Amino acid sequence: SDITLMDSNLSKLLYTMQIGTRVVVTIQENILLSLLAKFVVVAFTFAGKMTLLLAIAADVGVMLMVTLNGMKLLPRKQTFEDRNPRKRIGLTRKVYSSVSQNKDYSSGVANDDSKDLEII
Image (spheres, rainbow, N blue to C red):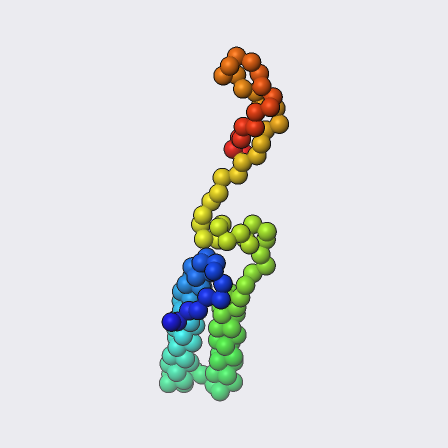
């Protein structure tokens, strides 16, 4: 298999597939950017407008841009809400809280002992 899960949490599988897609797209962007820059440098060289110093500066500049573009794949600082795997994979859960003063009017008498739940 291409992926081995070391945990029974299947949300990690979805996360792995998503990060894999992002990695492939970033690699394609980096290759396209570096090839485009190389073609521009070669074109300026054949036109007689490029010096060795400018070619090296262009190469180093593209290297920095590719590195910074690849850094977008690094994990970001997570908030408490982002750590919830249900939220990360798009599942939502309704949050319920018990209401302290629920009254049951079905029998015509207010009953404070009922434990109804209200969506907040």
